Amino acid sequence: MNISEAAKRSGLGSKTIRYYESIGLVAPAKRSENGYRDYSEHDVEALRFLQRARATGFGIEECRQLLGLYDNDQRHSSHVKSLVLEKVEQVESQIAELQAMRDTLNSLASRCAGNEGPQCAILDELSTADPDSRDTRTREGKS
Amino acid sequence: MNISEAAKRSGLGSKTIRYYESIGLVAPAKRSENGYRDYSEHDVEALRFLQRARATGFGIEECRQLLGLYDNDQRHSSHVKSLVLEKVEQVESQIAELQAMRDTLNSLASRCAGNEGPQCAILDELSTADPDSRDTRTREGKS
DNA sequence: TGTTGACCTTATAGTTGCTGGAACCTTTAG
DNA sequence: CTAAAGGTTCCAGCAACTATAAGGTCAACA
Image (cartoon, each protein chain N blue to C red):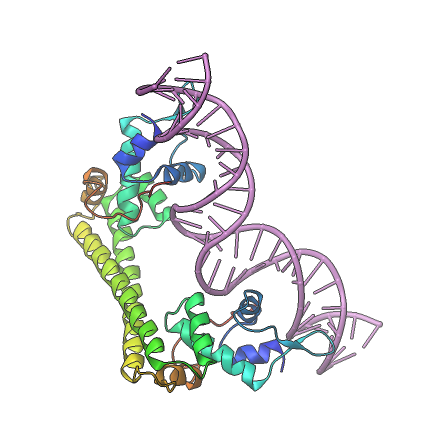
């Protein structure tokens, strides 16, 4: 089948599939006489696996690992499980960060009148607050 | 003052400041005789504003808007407030997405034995589940 | 048969927000 | 005098694609 059919069946876009091939995440597809990529059901299975894994929050390199385990019948399920649990932790810390952000935003908004006047507590706070009090990620490490 | 001092006082990195200048987010700094950038307290105030706004979750273009409002005494605080509330919504939907991800990951993990055997419910689910059931972002729009 | 339109191919550049490095100049301390 | 620690510019790279250009191919319709 052509790439667009494989795309439809896997839930990925055609461009994404070509991209995955280009970075070696999937093996190069075999070609038909006209040079078009030609996919088997087996290929689609792998693509689908990737679609699911990406949607579930795994990065490309993690997908590579998962795919390696998927293809390896010597695997230990404990290995897979630990990858997943590690991912849970990452996701939870992202959630916590976003929640802190949301709270900050809400507290800013609550102090702003939101009328036609120029006086604005949001801008005041953004300009005057202590730069060390909130975030550290923006600063440089040693070069 | 030199860029590294401005960096220290604003909470940004030197490279970040140069980058902000390069994309026109801040006005080009004036230069001392030796060609080094020379920052005033006023400049630092703007940089600090940016540091705070970025840490609070605003993107570069949003910062540009905020800075525009900051410099405009004809502004309406309602405009600023609506930007913030819009941001809150964006952040909340990101949170919801991540929570869904985490739940999926946890449910995958709970069904996996996590032992030395190769049988793994996680890999099974990732390979067999309906590709339409979870995520839409990976599919192509019309070209 | 011609041509339209949808599909395929490759290669390159853009996205977001920086960060790292190379190659070079200037200042400062020993 | 020399070496380190700053500064400068510009270019490459990160993630994970997406968009665009310029072209080849294929099926259908008049």
